[in-house]
Length: 297
Image (tube, rainbow, N blue to C red; front, top):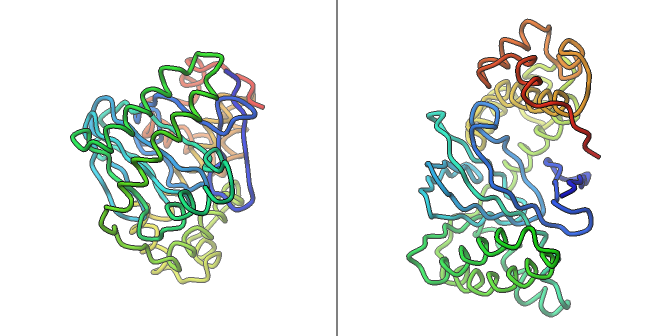
C-alpha cells in the first residue's frame, strides 16, 4: 500500500495513512523500533486504538500511565497527549489503529448526538478495553476485523462499517465509565506550545530558556511539565525528536551521516553516532545498511 502524509498547522504529529484518500492508519508495530523503546509524545485529531499482541506496553496519556497486557486494548480520544513505551526496554507487539471521526458523521444529527459527546468530553481522555467486558470485547473484535480485511479491495467499506460497529459499544462504555479526571487544559496547552517550538526549531541550537520561553514559562515549570506529561526532561524530549528525524532522513534520503547530523541539530557526527548507538544499538551507517533509502511522498 502507498503511504501518504497529512499535516495540519495545529497538530504535533504528522499523520500517515495507509491509502491516499481514506483517513485510516492500521499496522502492527514493535515498541523496539522506537527511539529508546519509546514513541514520541504527540497528539492528533484522529481517535486511536491499541491492541497488545505480546509483551507488556506502558502507555502515557496526559501524564497518566497505564500498563497493558496481551489481549488488552486502549481507546485514546482525540487531541490527547500520548505515547507508548517500555521502561525496561523489552519488546512489545501491538496493533495500532487511527481513524478520523469524520467517517462516523453520516449527518450533522449523528455527529452532534453520538460523536461530539465523546470527542469533546474532557473527562474521557481514554478507555481501557478489557476482553472480559462484553462491550470492550466487541470493540476488540471489530479492530481485529479491520486488520483481517486490510488486503481486501473493499477494505475502506469494511473498515467504515466496523468503525460504526465499534462506536456503539464505545458510546455505551463512555456513558458508564467513571471520569478519568479532566487534564489541566492550561498546562497541556503550554506544553503543546513548547513541543510545537521544538518541532519547528529542532535543527537549531536550543536552550532550556528557549523552550520555556515558547510556552511563556520559566525553566522550573518547563521541566516540570515535560516530566509530568511526557516522562522526559525537555532536553531528553529534544534529543529523541532529533533522533526520530535522523531516522527519517536515513531511511528516505541519500544524505551523508554528517549532513543528517547537522540537519537534525546535533553538534557533531561523533556525538550523533554515540547518541544513535545508545538508542538503537548500532551506528547510523549500520542502520542505513539494514534499511535502504526509500522514497516517501
